[in-house]
Image 1: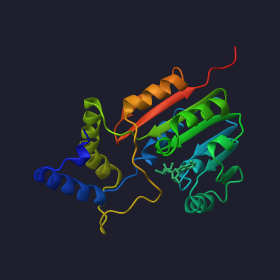
Image 2: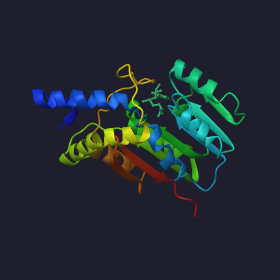
Image 3: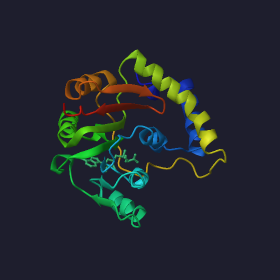
Image 4: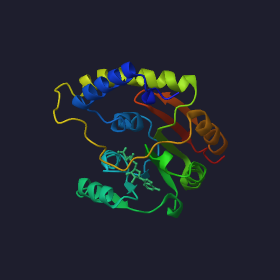
Length: 225
Ligand SMILES: C[S@@+](CC[C@H](N)C(=O)[O-])C[C@H]1O[C@@H](n2cnc3c(N)ncnc32)[C@H](O)[C@@H]1O
């Protein structure tokens, strides 16, 4: 059940009020996880790739920690924005290379709100090919709500969203909701279906529900014996 799609008038009214409140205290559900990514970097930090880098916010942060960072995005507007943001960083490349066109090995692959834009099995297979032994895949994702557990996490995300908004952005803004600054799409796979693919492709990966309507995936490619 998707609690964001309930149609009872009272629920709709409450949801509209919450939506208006949230738009006055905006925060990025994606950038929120950058701290988690930076806290889970692999030991070797030569090359990192951020797939679907959007405006390049994470790329700029990774550039302080890796010898080279490659941001890719299919969208030309995003690439212009990411290139502008990282123009002063000599160790950053931004381009439109697709995952299956990339050559490894790399030490880190990140995807923030991107995996549901891709063919998941193919993308995760490319991750196993590209990562160096000991390299790490860190993903922040969205899944379609399916199980009761998903609904409970959505509910918890909806309740905590305005609280986090007030903490992160205490001064309310006016002007109403602002559309997302990057291309978006709705996820089709539910958490459990995605977890089954992750388990089959990345044995030992840890996938967890998170607040902010997100989940995280961590996988470290086994080091060579
Ligand atoms: C929801 S946005 C997230 C952007 C960024 N990761 C962030 O956290 O702000 C998804 C991004 O993935 C990009 N994208 C979609 N399909 C892609 C693909 N096959 N290869 C690279 N980027 C892709 C879109 O253009 C978009 O910028």
